[in-house]
Image 1: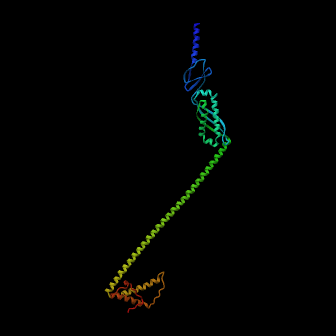
Image 2: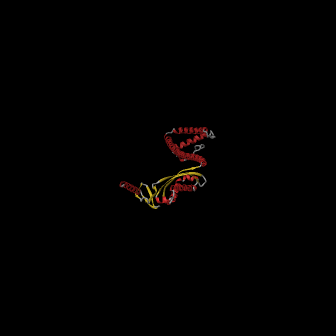
Image 3: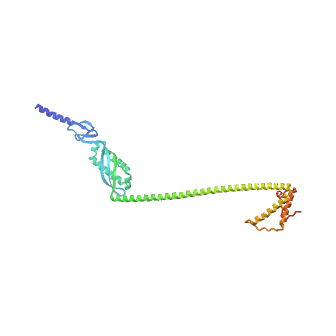
Length: 335
């Protein structure tokens, strides 16, 4: 009997000790009620409760969790039907509020997210829903974080995964994109043709400018060359005239000295003058620009006689009329 009583006592005592000790894993927390009212929160590790008085009513993780939102039909501001699904990340920061402020936390979170998605999509047009996805995520995160704060929940991130328009809308969008691509191709083609025309015109203008500059330089060089040629020709003619004058002067000096030194030189000079006079008439008559010259044959002896008198005066010491500027005519006769 004593042994049986001891075994019953040990069993009851061991059960009471086991009911007093509670172990909470890392990352979790638990709420304890005593006689139906909230008493305390159990932290991770070893905790003690009073058997039959204390009761663990809620135990949940405080780590971040992911909640997948199913596709939801929405209407945009321009009355286009779309389906939107999302995923958001959240965690419990106040275990007491999460249990006592809302009856079903996860269901409340899903309905809150769906409501906020419909609200945000209804304020945007269809095109904005594709281009402003990051802004929509930020707005949803801000609104959900404020709305779930009384529940002891912290929303850390919200991401829209898919925005799917209806089949008719997708077909219209494809037609619109095709038309837009054709329009852009036409614009690019026209811009290319315009740039090509501009480049061609610019090239022609530059070519004309270069050609005009080349012609101008060529004209200037040609004028300078002609000017130099004229100057050189004038210098050559002047030098030739100077040389002829010097030769004529030297020849007249030689003739004068010869007439003074030799007596028979007068007849030779008269013959040469008469011959030159006749050759001059022949050249005048045979030239292209010749003119008719009337000369009395009877005046030829008188002309020759006048030339002879010039030579005679030169031999007698008179000044040479060729150097003094006097002019003798063919009608003069020796007096």
